[in-house]
Figure (cartoon, rainbow, N blue to C red):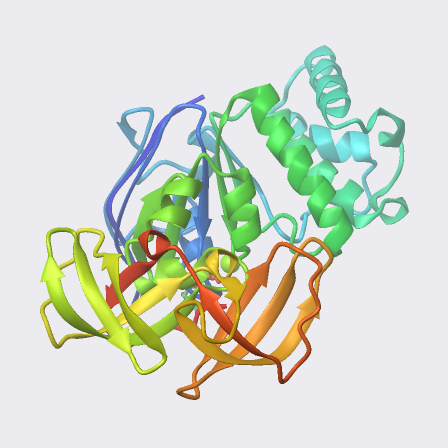
Length: 362
Ligand SMILES: Nc1ncnc2c1ncn2[C@@H]1O[C@H](COP(=O)(O)OP(=O)(O)O)[C@@H](O)[C@H]1O
Ligand SMILES: [Mg+2]
């Protein structure tokens, strides 16, 4: 178990800077997820921690010791990749023991540790098989087993579930959560999938274009996103962004309006606005409730209904031509063309400056 500290960490490939001064603290035993869209630098950052990429500048500490120039094998880390990276000509037993074999570990120790990993991962019955005789989920378990036997201070996972089909991904996600509970080890897990981040993490680090957008617990980020990017990235369906104009501004709140929305008071979340500002009001689809057409705060026509079972998602065309998504927790059929109103608790809305979104949310 260990702490990991990243201080102003930077990485350039030639003239292109892809990690632009990142500060992250990982506490002992914490499960930290780096999440962000493809190409934002997640794998590069993880590989820098593993020692598979040089650090251009900044410091990386593991357990209080600067490890920038330490070889990967001396950092006390073990990494699990999306592509498993297991050897086809070796049995599961040999694959799991591989790191110990390389290190010249005594036979008895190898047997004990492989048996322990196989027990934790419930794959005792697979030990004599070859990888070609395993499913994708079982192969990934072998890769995780190989990490466990090394008894690392920190586990690193780079999108370990991305090659699995949806049902298996959910099973394996839960297994990785249990593995963390059982081992209590520090884990850093990289994914582009906000559901994996929300479900697994003690702490989420949202990355965009090589920079940290926000760090916090899943619920802190979900309920108090610091910017439009985080607001749009976490949660499904994505938050609604409504263009509004700011009217009067009071302590901690502002009155906003738009042709589609009656004037309402919303919290400003510590951000500063002045009258006449253009701004974005962000509202989660789950917080919108259908009302009679002329009741509620927003008014429009149902364009599309999607029944997902536990919730129904409706796409409403507002009277000003804008579109808004509501997720209602009931099996209610609203036919396209139906006129409706929508209301929401203004205290649960978020107001952001109307900056251009450089990257589209997923
Ligand atoms: N070896 C490399 N040489 C040059 N550019 C690279 C290299 N590896 C990654 N990059 C670039 O760095 C950026 C971040 O990549 P990566 O860390 O793989 O993103 P992610 O894992 O978030 O999808 C991308 O623009 C990618 O093209
Ligand atoms: Mg990657």
